[in-house]
Image (cartoon, rainbow, N blue to C red; front, side, top):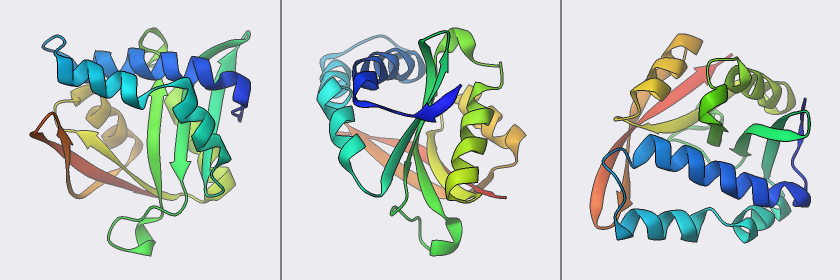
Length: 162
């Protein structure tokens, strides 16, 4: 079931985010900078604050009262031009449930609510994510650099035009 996130979901959104983020980006292990980023970014309070934003929405995928994934969209965020649509800020699916169509369903649900033109960024080292988006028809439209612990990490900007 896909539904809008509630305040009661915030603790699970935080836990799922930490799990997926570390699996995707801490491939060489943990360092202080990575751990600080994770605990400062993915907190219950962070998600509670996002739920109060007028132009931001989080949809959750739930199965038998277990959170398996979520999508967060920022309807005001643009990349270069309004024609690229809104930003898919986050699309996370618990690792053991990836490959079951959950991510695709979450993207489709957001598209039905907010339109089918959207963009997102993905780290160049996240080959699974890049392959997933390419399979769905996303096009590479640019680059974005994410700074963490004084280092620049290249991300690709991918856009979907439905």
